[in-house]
Length: 493
Image 1: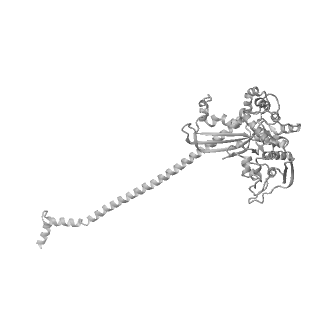
Image 2: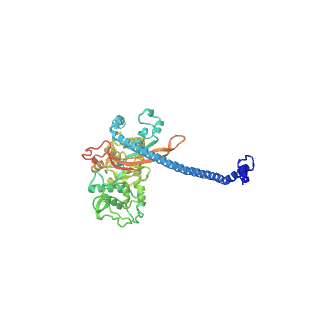
Image 3: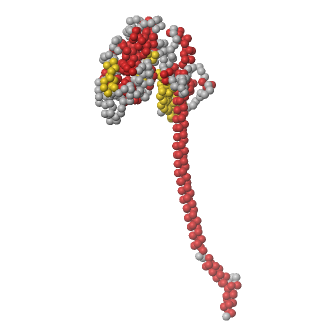
């Protein structure tokens, strides 16, 4: 029994014997299962590192998408804000040009007093109202186009002026007198049958009705947009029926220029999109298209032959019925004059004489950039070929020769006709159109002139200003005509 005990004891206590080796092997056996566990922990760490890489790549991808979206949103917001800034600046440029033009027109009497001595020395009489609105775009260049004003050789240094500078914008102004056109609306100066007859004769004359043959005859020998043949007198009657207040059809007799009623007004109820006659004055030029016989051909011939140049428009709905002898084109003056004379003179029925009148007056206006007729009497002297040495027709006779074929044959007016002509014509303007286009945000410049050739934003303001005393706002609104006039029409686009 002691030997086994001793053997176990010797094994336990022998540091260098077999027992020690057995113990070591036992410890090795005991720790052997831990090796696979330690290897699994390494694989877990490897897996963790793989997941972290995937998360990092995913985060980078998400951040890239977010950054791209943020960049796109920021770019869009910047583009929108830039566009809004340019549009606002373009609108302000247009408004500035409009208000400056109103101020220029209001200051016309002061300008007239300054040039009065020069005008008297040339024509020997006081100047009429000066059409400063025609040169508003040139006079207001320092405010509307600063860079262009700096390049002008005027000897004026605009750089030291307060409020002027490079604003990356400009404005263009077109202004003209509405009484330089033929009025097709209810006139302010005439009423009842007098108004209807006056408008009818003007329209018939404008359409070449008193000429035989007339260059406008083919226009009235084809079907209109509704498939009907519409003669000149039907167009005249339809235009008047639109704005007169009764429901009777207007019949115009070109032979004696009389106005009469013949049944009910034309009905537009048979059209695909029916409507009624307004029986009230026109509110806009576009409203003319609703009248029978006024299609695209009529519009392009008599209403608005050059849409890009509103000053070349032939008709108006804002006139008083009286034509400005200094502003109206010669064709309009001739049409208004022939509405009174009709077929009584060769000036109205002979196309050659009419062409002489038109060409002569156009040439004179090109050579003399000042109002030619200081009063309605001067115009009557011109068409009658009489007056003093400083009247227009005698001056042209002295310059061209009394028998020059370029001169039209003067006409003779009776006392009653002279009184009517005196009522038909004026030498001033009270209702004016002011069209202003504002531009901002230069996109591209010309390399040679450094002028902007392309703009990011454009705003157009079309207005009609009324200075006519008949339209004075009543108290308590004003009680008097404001110095800058009142809006008769306003449109911004």
